[in-house]
Length: 242
Image (cartoon, rainbow, N blue to C red):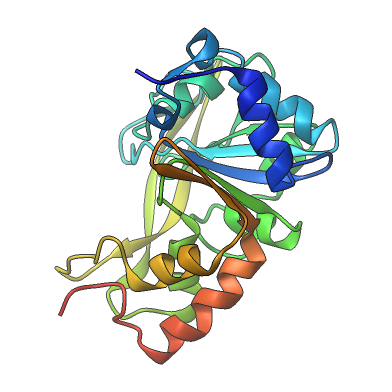
């Protein structure tokens, strides 16, 4: 099995341009690294050091819990091993969203949670706020890209609509009722995987490193939204099978 040390990974990230003050949305399949030094325990610390105090780290911690209770601290994410590393990080915050929560690490985390507008992909969503704040996307060995749903809502595709999900938020010693306006699929459609918009965007993006037969990519969230929006506007069914 391939082994990756953190210094090697740090060099990749610096070569891609990750640096101080960056606000980063991270999607990862950690299997790209084979056996990552320390079983990845120090990965978040490395990323935190690179973006600095003014930067922000963000990763999905989706649970789709509502109408069941959502416990901010204890409800486990459905999204991969990276969320376990985030969940164990000392200074992590979590968005009180019973559908599409995110883990946040950085001095601006609480401000972003305060400004969250109870939507999954609306203007004040975590993705929307990252877009306004020059956010970037870091993909470690995966093609997953949750902002594609932001673009779907922005354009208004016919197979999704905003649907309100409600439930109880458990925040340590306090409980309260809340809701999420989630851009839900309403038609029985099957997504194209990989879809042509993301595939073409990844192909055209030159800021990437091949490693262990996969890719590490870093790109501007605005760049992706500006690339995807007109293409999806031209063909609102381009992401699904006929």
